[in-house]
Amino acid sequence: MSLDQAQVRRIAHLARLEIGDAEAEHYAKELSRILDLVEQMNAVDTTGVAPMAHPNDAGLRLREDAVTETDQREKFLKIAPAAEAGLYLVPKVIE
Image (cartoon, rainbow, N blue to C red; front, top):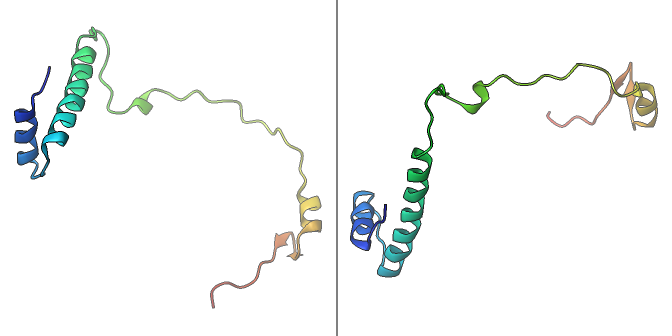
């Protein structure tokens, strides 16, 4: 589907947008490309494909929950500027 400048100006008027002649020509080309893409997607046969509300509705593949790193907590607590009872101490920020 191809849009001309008059149709683009009409769309701009309905959207309460002010566009010039050069912009109308540019938007006519861009909107025509978008509509061509929509026509191309509509041409795809989707019979038997269930509609989805969101692409994440498909199940996520889960990996095994396994520990992959060694415990280095004590090492990091030793090099911290201030630590007490296994916790990092930081300066008071909010009074």
